[in-house]
Image (tube, rainbow, N blue to C red; front, side, top):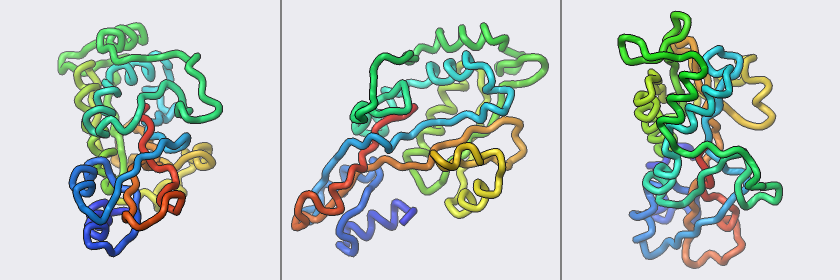
Length: 240
């Protein structure tokens, strides 16, 4: 069921026994006596922004590193996700058997982000947006409209990137449109084995792809024994 509001309504009335729910619904649903809340770590449920490396804007790794350092990811985990997650610097969650902390890290640092962009040849134009060789640093980030957290993260990223001179516009797509667009687009063939993405067809020269997996919380009725279907890991683990 893709609509969070519908799912939450069914949980309230008891028409569904368990579900993975959005972070924003935690407080309201936890107060219901017939539901109990469980949070579980998952090694695979990761939310991240994926850049299309075929597009010139994202070809320079200094630019990609700057985009990461411009966003306060820890603040996202604390406020938007109610501390039910962790910031990652790789594609592996800390609960994975393959996890290692011996990887490059890119902490929140606006000045460092500006420095990397400058090293990559981007300078502020008269309109306050970075420019390079006559090209403005502007693109569209698309995600599915049914996921409130993902849409909120897109807005947070938009504000953070604007502070370093990047013009990013958000585009919220219906789930059915996402499912129709991506399989038909050859640019996503190399991603399909590992992830599902969202393409931007609005005419922007650049776009981002947002990973489809949703890491959320699970609620189950008090009478359901532990170890049942609701015990399957489902907590949000990261924002990259």
